[in-house]
Length: 487
Ligand SMILES: [Zn+2]
Image 1 (cartoon, rainbow, N blue to C red):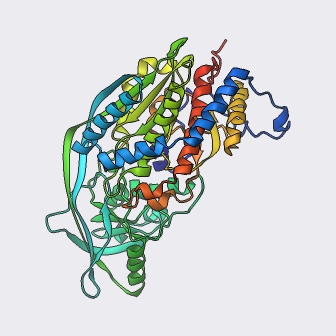
Image 2 (cartoon, rainbow, N blue to C red):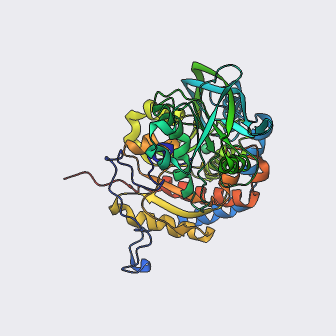
Image 3 (cartoon, rainbow, N blue to C red):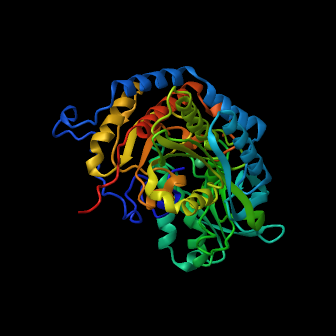
C-alpha cells in the first residue's frame, strides 16, 4: 500500500515527504510540461537493440499468464498469511521455492522479528434501543483486548476525525467514539490517505479525551456488509484503546438510530499479542552483467490480512514483479545492472519488512539506482510517476515513451514509491510509481472479497508488460536519476 505513515500525517499520498530531505527536489509535472510542448523536450536516447528488446518483452508479457499462475499458486497453496504467523512462514517457503524454480540467483530469507497481533474474537453488538443485534465488525490491527465478555458504553458520533479532534473531553469521556466518515472513490486512490487517518488516529485521540473505545465506519468504497481490516497507529502512539471497524450498512444503522436517540453498543475483542514473532524478507536477484553492484529494486509484500485470501493485496504484486523479472531473465543477455526482487514480510501491521530491509541494506543504499513497488491491487497501470532529479527528466521521458504503447499516461515527479521501499527513498534512492487504476481497489481491500475473483488476468498481463519495460530499461542503461554531486 502507498505510504501509510504519510497518510497518517494527513498528507496526500503523492505529497513530497518532509523526511526525504536527501532527495533531489522534484519538479511537479516535468514529464508532461507543456511549455515548451512535450514533443520538443529532450528525451534520452535508447539503442535500436534496446527498443527491439522492449518490443519483445511487451509482446511476451501480453501473451503470458505466468503472473496469474503465481498468484493462484500463492492463494491456493498458502492462503491468507498474517504477519508473523505460521502461515506467513509457509509463504516464505513457497516464495523461496517459486523464485528458485524461476531461475533467479541469490535466493535467500533475511529474518527479522516483530510484535505479533491477531484477533481471536472480534464482535460488536447494538444492545439498546430494542433487542440486541450483531454488527459486522473487524478489530483494528494492534487493538488491545476488551475486558472478558466485552465493554458496553453509549455511542458518540463524529462525522470525521477533525470533529473528534475539536470535541471537548466531556463529550467523549466514558463513551465509545464512532467516526462515521465516508471514503471517496478515486482512480489514484487519493481517498485512502484521507480515510485512513481515522483508522490510525481515532484510538489515540479518543483515549486522550477519556473515551472507552473507538469504532469507525470501515475504510472502503463498497456497500458490501464487510468490515475492512487494517492497522492502526496505536502501538506507535503508546495508546491502549480497543478499536474496531464496522461495515457501511451497520454504520448507517448506527447513524440512523442515533438520530432517534441514545444508542449503547458492546464491543468484544480478544487479541493474541506477542513480542518477537518471526518474519522475514525473501530476496532474489538477476545479477548485472557489467555493473553487478548497481541495484534496481522491485518490491511487493508477502503477508496479508486474513479475512480474504491476499490475492490483490498483495499476491498480485508478488506475481507481477516476479513475472516481469522472469521475462528479463529469459533474455539472451542479462541487463548491465542487478535486478533485485524484495518480497517483504509484515507490511500490513507496520511495514516491518521494509524497515528491516532498510536497516540491513543501509550501507548499499547509494548503490540502489531506483526502487519501486507493486502494492495497489491488480488494476491496469495507467500512469507513470517519477521522483527524479530535474537533470534526469530526459530519462523520465524515455521511460514514458517506452510505456506509451501500453496505454500508460505521463504522470508527475512526485512518486511515492510504496511503503516497502520507503526506507530506501528516505535514504535518498530515486523511486517511481507504475500507478495502477484503483477505482475499485477499496471495494476489495482488506475484506473477505480479496480473492482471485478480484483479478482480471488481462490487466495483470498489462502490469507485467509495464514492469518489464521499466525494469529492463533501468537495468540495461547507465542512467542516474539522482542529482549530480554538489561542486
Ligand atoms: Zn498491501
